[in-house]
Amino acid sequence: MSAVSRRLQTLLEEVAVEQFDGQVVVEPIEGYQILTRRRLVDPLPGVRAAAVLRAAARRVLVDAVEAARAAGRSWDEVGEALGLPDTDEPVGEVAFALVVEGREPERAREMFRVPSASWRCGACGELVRDQGPFESHPADVESGHAADCTRHLADVQAWRERTGWEE
Ligand SMILES: [Zn+2]
Image (cartoon, rainbow, N blue to C red; front, top):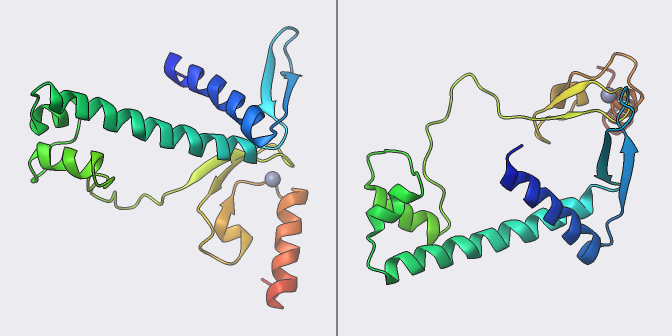
């Protein structure tokens, strides 16, 4: 994690606690005597805090770019400073679309790569690949749970009851 990310993580925790009643626990890391890990008891106040930080970061970006334009810098220079990818569209136009319209630069979709999030399951401890809420059967949505994972088995059971199907 970069130094900026660490500072943001600290800020996120503060916002989660101050604005969204988040609670922090400090727990030992398994296998270590001294090392501890801080985490929010309920991660959702953290998500709310992250949304606040993202909106604030967006405001910071707009302010910085307007200051650059006020100082006589061109949109092309702004685009270069933003590190925008080289595309067919002029970098200054891409910068304007991003900063003013909030439109992310077009990225070529990577073939063969299914977008996914990954996290360690709180029930079985395995690393899970999460492809989002697009499919119905839990096994199509999350892969990596242990075969006897209680959370996953409960999801499958709920799916059976919901759909009336077996597998
Ligand atoms: Zn699991």
